[in-house]
Image (tube, one colour):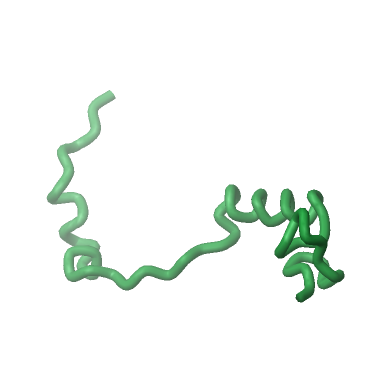
Amino acid sequence: MSCPICRKATVADYRPFCSRRCADVDLARWLRADYAIPVPLTDAEDDPSDADDNHPPETR
């Protein structure tokens, strides 16, 4: 198996990565939302014109 970040051989302690650095790079990508898991929209989410009707206006 190869590291998904740099393609080097993996190390058991960091599997599926080859090093702590590559594991941290992957974590940073998740935290920055570089990765996203697609989710199907529901009927309520399909019509953006109704989105503001469900929430009271913001006050400052």
